[in-house]
Image (cartoon, rainbow, N blue to C red; front, side, top):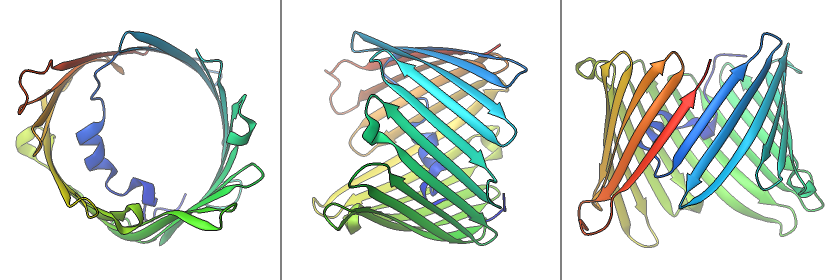
Length: 276
């Protein structure tokens, strides 16, 4: 693949991951196993609000092709085929979720030294078409995305933004929701945090005149323990501790509560991920 600008869907992803990834109020158990033949098996069990659900996923890799099959407790089967470099610098992804045959989708991603393009088409009578384009370099890129509904002949989504990446920082500005919302984020890695980072995000909804300011940080206590925290101007505080029990196996404990409503019960989550 060409080393060029990232996809539009990845704009601000590092900042978003620091603020959202691994935070949970559920109990989740994951166990994974791998074989030398290219087969991976992943089982998930989740307890959410007293209700349990789970899924089993199998992945098979062979040369430039990957097949993923996931079966959940609601008898849904999601199958995804991914082929890389079927055409030069292109990735093709086909997926279908049974028994809903109308959920099928075909996506093509193309990567160039100064551009990245994606097109996804739903496989049904009146499909929707999603497409995005970014232009620039790995350091700075401008992009846009849109969704077009064939049945109504209307655009259901269009967003645009800019992303700036440096070795120790990342900044993005995204105009979304058909121009009704604006999200600005900035992330900076600090040696003082042992490889951790500070992040700030401002989100504004123009139609409701609502602003949300969120700040967060991550700190590496030691090579095996990560601590994260976040707080927004509405008083929502979240924190987590993630410890690597053994290589690629993690225990994560997270919690959240509203500092402006201390009478409410805090939320706690636990996630255990085991890999051989």
